[in-house]
Image (tube, rainbow, N blue to C red; front, side, top):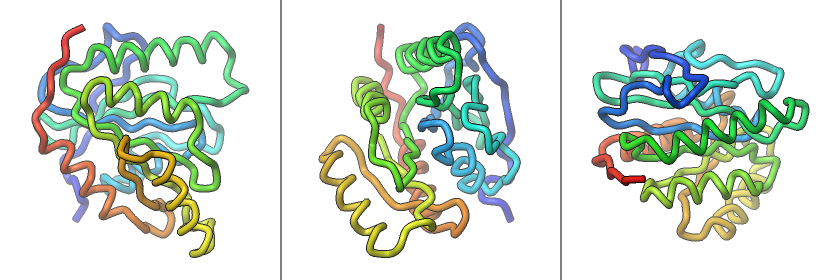
Length: 201
């Protein structure tokens, strides 16, 4: 049986005015293009085709809303940091993401997917700042860890913990081997179980 048998796509938003109704609670997924963000969302919900995946980075160009069950949502934010995307599109994505963090009263947590073979980048750290300014917990998934040796994985995780300090929790994750999926799902559920913390402005 699927982890979330009732999960379904709700809508996509190209502009803030098109965001889903701001009620209930939601956890956002963020990450660089090609970090494995959509794959992580799919494997965590047990639905391989829920979020669109592509070998071409930068395909998630909208804010996509999914309902886990009544009053609980996941939000797939546009991937960031892919150089081949036109500057105008990059600017639009920044506008969308900025508006999302400023407006969404139902946001209760952020999952950031980071390719474990890359270090945390400036935009990843900016996303953490966005969330912490709202009082939202942040959990980092170091994705594609199946491509690393055990020693490499241990080193990457240790370095990420040093970089993050108390700003976020972090774990190893693989959509292919399923390593860390249960841990990531538990972190997501803890966020969703917490009450929304409305912030004006």
